[in-house]
Length: 462
Image (tube, rainbow, N blue to C red; front, side):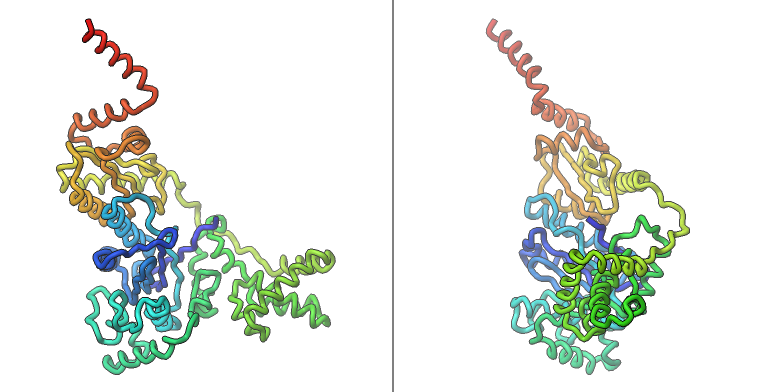
């Protein structure tokens, strides 16, 4: 599967969404929603994120955010990671909360920020959660129209400034702007996204491609970026088709639609506008010609030559090769160990701690979760585990899966003790008891255990 494209640079705007695994609810209570908003606030403090708009629904959320430091991945690891840790511990569950990675679309702010904020704020109405948007507590809409005081971390002035300068009148203008579309279904600015990645005009898309492609070698580029870099424009396709199929007007039009659909990366709407067709007609015309090419080998060769002439591979980056993934993984793990040790200083009741999973085996990537095992003399109270998990997640900026070794057995216990890196061992007796429990549960130790018990029994009988 192709990697999701993450274009990051200082000052970038994004529309970010993240959905619950198997579309299950990720917000089940008022406390859940308030905790999530708290993580948005901490993202602004720790990573400099600027939140322009938000909306929380039951099984997903929407954010319109800006990254002055160009660090979207760090911001989202903190938000999703910290919230997952909180959610899992509170509900005594393990594993992923969100469905895959978050989806982030790079946005040309001046052109689309206002439209996107409207799309985000209309979600509760479209979902049938509320009849009046102003009454919905879990979005930034009330702050935009002056019915609620904006949270200190919410920035409303940029989007409102695009509608006017007077603070009072602009809030009323925004309310009317929202209401004008409140009864229109499926009119989303996201229909204009290019290659599932960028929302903006042609000049913006080209600027982003040139800026991002400069430092990334061709082999390292995600598929979505390759499509953007390698794609010919609609005008280029039309010129090439007119030249190769001059005098064959009907065929030329069919081939042009087909190649624009295959090669340009443009939306069906943009292609349709150039040919005077509806979006569905573009898709159907492309499919019909594709089927014909399977039967007409001569035409297939002509179209194939045309296609090859239009796809020009970009030059490889002049930059040197990046560090091997293994070296990066080791460096990440080393930093993690130091950070975890520092956090554990505030938790003296934790007598033993290991880092296991991919991090414990030194093959951690930027997308890895962090598996941490802890143990005290007794099972740690749930309040302590929640505080520790929250502190670790906030400090590391990653999703943390925390397990209490006094509460697990089997494979998890084996991995945490035998395939891990020890972070803290302040009590050798705690460690010895854990090993003893592991050995007694191991199949290959059972004959030994049985023999010891038989010897004891025989001595007692004598």
